[in-house]
Image 1 (cartoon, rainbow, N blue to C red):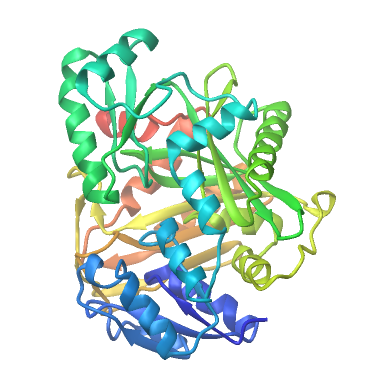
Image 2: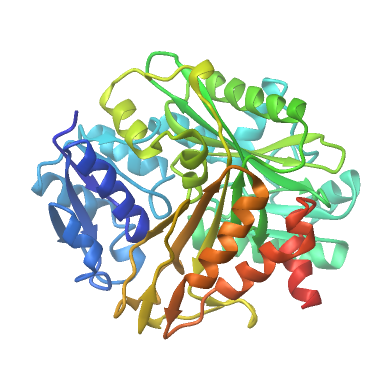
Amino acid sequence: MFSRILIASRGEIALRIIRACKELNIETVAICSEADKGARYLEHADGAICIGPGEPELSYLNIPGIISAAEITDIEAIHPGYGFLAEVSHFAEVCESSKIVFIGPNSNVMRLMGNKMEARKVAMENKVPVIPGSDSIVNDQQEALSVAHEIGFPVLIKASAGGGGRGMRVAHNDISLRSSFELCQREAENAFKDPSVYIEKYIEQSRHIEVQILADNYGNYIHLGERDCSCQRRHQKLIEESPSPNISNQLRDDLCKAAIKLAKSVEYTNAGTVEFLVDKDEKFFFIEMNSRIQVEHPVTEMVTGIDLIKEQLKIAFGERLDLRQKKVKNEGVSIECRINAEDPYNDFMPSPGTITMFLPPGGKGVRVDSHIYTGYKMPPNYDSLLAKIIVHQNTRAEAIACMKRALNECVIEGIKTTIPLALSAISHSDFVNGTFDTKFIENFLESS
């Protein structure tokens, strides 16, 4: 196994990786920016190195700085976590050329599947359904209008690169398409340094369901079941669960088989997530593949008992998967609520500042993944994720009851958080009945 790795991320995922490494006797070096310098989670690493100011482009996105830190600290591999450079194929390519193991798929696969337009083509070649839309990048408003009229409104304009819900806008008519098109291009350029966009039919009343896969370097592929990520705002997930409620076993099986087929077609390795939209008639459509660990990976860990970070490390080191599909058992129900430093009742306005009190929930079946503590200063430079509260119980009803209890126990003072929204959302009849879709949170906020 690796003797020492560099963690090229921050916050809760950096701490999550540190913990997995400790259990595998791997030393860790964590990078940090000046904004994160002194954060307590860094004390759990075997070393920490500051690589730049708080601005992401000067620190966590600074590839030369990260590679220099890796060379200085004599590491063997880099774990990118999620966000920042986790899905930047150029970063993986630089690691490869520097003889540093990138803990993820190789750069060629990342480049292919990281471009949503190219990934669509891969899906179509393998007869995996995709949403009707443009066959290539859409370059201007006139071309966008032509595609929209052909497939019919509403349509979704999507950045070809990146993820996280950025560079995506819905248009319901010609006027909104014209205004949204250039905005989407600018967002894509600012977020991903690539203004390329394409257009898809917007599927209303849809569910967002994703499949977790693992693949080693010896042709072994397994899936770990699916997660429902439909509870989201602005295309960013807020509540996730596994298994997905109220879907047929046939659909579940079809989604998992399609995910494995896509992964095999590009010779994917390490952990990955294949994402689908499912309409009200249980027709499913491939939307993208994420070539990294997901924020919501704990729900899969809870129902399978498999540590995904450890599996990533083992695969990257060159070990074969010990697991075979028949041995993967999904038991019980797990739900995760993301707790963000935002005011959900004021247009999700960011709420950076000092946490004057943090009391995490506990008890049977409750897991908290977080890097915060009383006195922690939430910087304004980064994603607003504070903590993830994850529960695991035998039934969905028990899991919802457990999550309500955990959310009520959790105390975060000094800043606004999304705890009140999460508590209200999981108590809503549509969530309890498992009849929600991707518009659930938006509709819930409009009616509250």
